[in-house]
Picture (cartoon, rainbow, N blue to C red):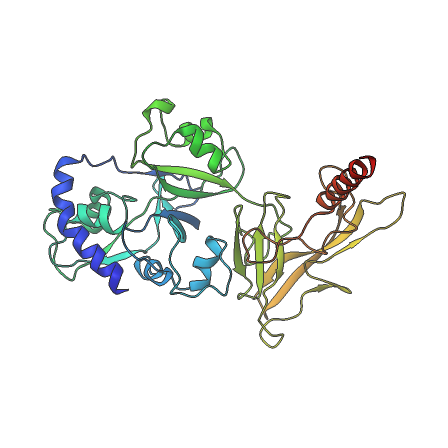
Length: 374
């Protein structure tokens, strides 16, 4: 924690001079048209740690007051064995609760910041929170009349922009993203799996040329579909690509991969049955599939899918036995594939797919043929 604190202290001393020369970006307000008076969801923040600082995962967790180290790992698809002392990725995604009210969204109650000697709201906004928020936002949220005069030791709520709205009628996870210098709308759209038009409309940009470095964009991330029941406690579970989430009292790990866009839920490894009940569909364990080997229907199979959990009378994990096509997009049968697919970035060993193996064998045979002919 000491290297980050020292870096932040030096940055906050120098930042006021830079701010006199650098115009402050306009406040970012993400549209959130809640149907009820107040609606909450889970949103993501893309945070870039201070340059030239050794920022650890623990530092990030402390800054944003995250209750769980595992949640930070999950949002960034890091293995659960990753220690808190590991260096933070840059940027790093932080999952926070979002509250929608009055047509706009802001992170709910967190994060907070304790004012230090020499702090101004502009220095806190740009220095500590990397431009994700403006001093105007912090001042308005905390009823501060003079942004240059805040009391040392005062706790400030830092309302980071977020949203819970569907996009195009489809549920998404909204990412608050600070535009790096040299970026383009097309590049940001391609990187995050969305379209230029969606970004322009969502952020009320007249055209792609109006994009500014340092601007905070609302970037919608596609999520995987699931078989979770609408009556389950985690019925609103939304997991974007290249990440996972722990649910059902951490007993279930659900990952999302762009290969299938289907939520892949497995029992969390390392937890005993004394803590987590066994999740099965009859004789089939959660996350496994049973493939039909009949030549007439080689692609038909059944899968034991996660359907949520309940806490009404007792803790129970729900499952759903589902029949579906088990072939990939090329129509190949998964006879030689693993019994379940692993979520991207979970630290599991990568295996060759059946199609890759077939292509490799053909290449070897062709090479042998040419050698024999010579």
